[in-house]
Image (cartoon, rainbow, N blue to C red):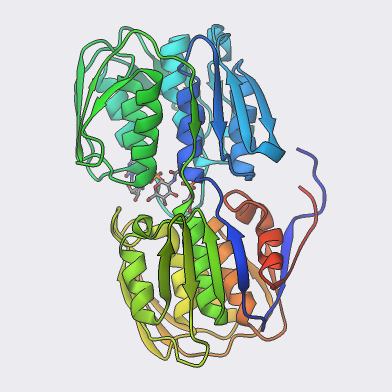
Length: 433
Ligand SMILES: CC(=O)N[C@H]1[C@@H](OP(=O)(O)OP(=O)(O)OC[C@H]2O[C@@H](n3ccc(=O)[nH]c3=O)[C@H](O)[C@@H]2O)O[C@H](CO)[C@@H](O)[C@@H]1O
Ligand SMILES: C=C(OP(=O)(O)O)C(=O)O
């Protein structure tokens, strides 16, 4: 990593978004798939529609660090992974300097356990959203036969895989990466594994499809009750990653905020779950035209306020709660938001307040008093979705909004500046990482 000037997004508001945007491949599908590709002891995996985001760069660095050969053909959005040489247990380490920059690093643990017999986790990152534990993951690995211990002095986690075998697992809440990680831990463990209270997110289904193509035996995806029959080995295969529903939701809300009309290539309305209905109630019009989602909002009609509570899929996605809060500042009346997944996602309220919004926060509930005119000012992206939400706010604010650190936006949105400029926005991304 070269340390240049910090990346920031400079946004000047007042232009409606119009035209066509390409929705990227899903961040939350590609990260587990890179982890899954490392389970294949022979051959080369080809992943298509890979988003050009920082989290993917970190994941590929991590894959190389543990001994995989990786090619990222960026123009083709294609990653080729050869994991045949993962045989040095000394390298079965997730070092803090890479792994603490993204949460998806924890998705490498099953491959380390199965291929190298052990895993050492020196750090796991991701967005700073309050308390985010990994206890479901570790408890599940232990029930499958691994020995999980923590270094008292440094908070490092050591996992000895030993003889893994199927087991009966459950999740306290339907954790997204928890479900993926337990499936990946079970696919090569002899015997039958049952995972109760599993996540239903479309990305989890896409990961199950990918693993199934590799030769895994998984049933019950999308039902909350998953059964895995362990197999002896998995093959390297080709897979095209589904489109990113959060990226699609952000672009739809940007079109709504600015009173524009956009075609989102690759976006699927059914993947938005409850978010679709909430946005329609606010006055956003959707039309699915085959594999293209058309979104418009009549600039002459006021945006209506909304109530939303975040919950696992198909509930309102927590990752869309931040842009919804920004959009709610533009609605005529009081909106109520309840963040039921994370206890630290309302740092955005203070940043929007700097721009002129009126938001009352009480723990994990917020009331947004709209409509308020927003004005541009320097604001802090505390996490990825806060960053995207502040860019959204900047698109309607008077004057210039400067959003930093831009790295957090780049963690999850590919070529954000280019795609927004193509829609007519005045956005400049400056600085280098
Ligand atoms: C890389 C990835 O896919 N990230 C997504 C994934 O994160 P991630 O998979 O980390 O989110 P989870 O679904 O696991 O988290 C849900 C809740 O469960 C808690 N929890 C989770 C695991 C655990 O072992 N113990 C525990 O207490 C978390 O702190 C959180 O409050 O799903 C989130 C919820 O849809 C999204 O916001 C993230 O974008
Ligand atoms: C919380 C998010 O990501 P991560 O789980 O990778 O931190 C997110 O995508 O908004």
